[in-house]
Length: 434
Image (tube, rainbow, N blue to C red; front, top):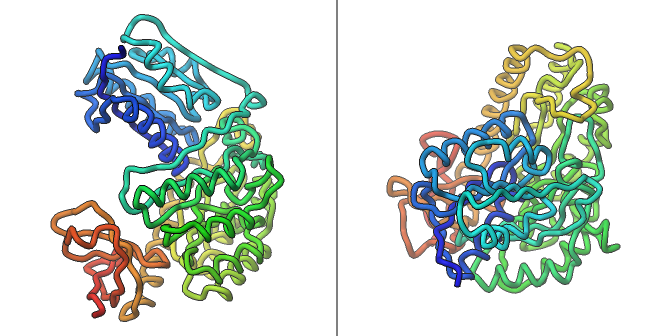
């Protein structure tokens, strides 16, 4: 009989990782083990790593060392994209007992049980990108309000700066029928909102001959789920059909996260992106024509190799004209075994930092401007469960963050409110509409 264990998870990176960690945690709990948030108390510490930047790799190494120092007797297991790309580098860190590739991530519970006790041996699995063929079905369940549902994994795009294809493999997905079954399970657990997530979400259907539009139609019919959001979608995959489905649905929210990475066509070509600025602008216009109140978030990279001052300014002015609601700004980080890592004319770190800071200032201005448009308007807010200093928060259909005095009875309910100016424009206040 396996002794009962306390298991702690630490997740780095994307929503996809969080959905996978939550699923791994459920397997431990369903087998009688206890999840804990404290490293010091844990018998097992599992790290789901990210490798999108060097900073993510460094953060993973630091957390491993911190855990081992705090709790030298705990089994330390590492999986995720960093573990896929550099398993031996992680295995060589003192205290690490298990390193699992992304292909073997779903075997985490079995591997921990087989190990049994720290120090008996070290388990390391690895595989090539071509061998990354398994699909680990996952959804998050820690938040009573919202769940992240993984529908797709891998990416075939191979952008010049990105290591995700190497870390996650080719684009693949599970059938729509299985996704719907997962959504029904989520609804059965009481969640009101699902965030649809994947590596290249809009590429859904690559392995089953289905389409992302077909998936959205099927999910729209799941009883019990009142809201859907699409975590991120490539602009070339954001078709008129998908926009129309979202606009006509009562469940799909007017909220899109669309990466551009650069507002300069020459740089986009060097990045091996599958669109230009004209196409991107047209997609934004199509969204706004169908959903004028849509929240649009945009990813952008500052300081890609060869990006000149003039091209950085071109990106700034392009985004300023587009007026998205939010910018996710990333200074360029060279990743091993990507074409961009070998490119010449690297941008100095100080210049990258300055360009990123300027884009962050633009983001703050755009975010404030978006919120101010809705002061005095009415909206529906789904209230979340975590109290902070006597307040609770929730989000409108178009992703405006709202706060109100904590009221336990409101958790996981949707309330009609009037939006009011807050103390800062990171969140708004409200009053209930009777």
